Image (cartoon, rainbow, N blue to C red):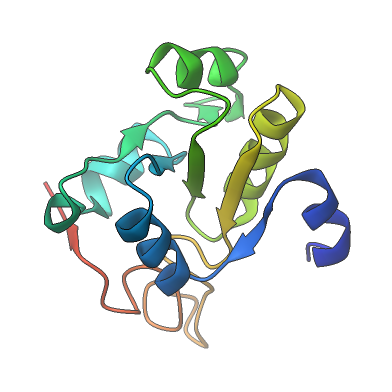
Length: 146
């Protein structure tokens, strides 16, 4: 379990899915950075930001199949045109990888990195499945699946 007080010191903070949507809606320069893997994007789904006139930025925090941290993560985010002054909303499966990614970006000089605490799929329910208790999908925020 993450120590929230420790993590907040390392990046701008943990936010809910609903707050993430509000930030993306209210801040024209805010960018949603989805840090999950290609397989998750393809098979689980992705946030749909078309209503906001935006698209997510897809940069994997970990490399498949080794699941080692992507050594080019920060560079890839920077190469996308995102600047250290932009508000970044980081989204992973359940908030763990995105918290680590937010910390790495903050350490690299990005000033406003927020972690979506419940992620895209959220926590596992009593049957071991994600997507029903909390997270982007469970809160009814727009998403699409290929």
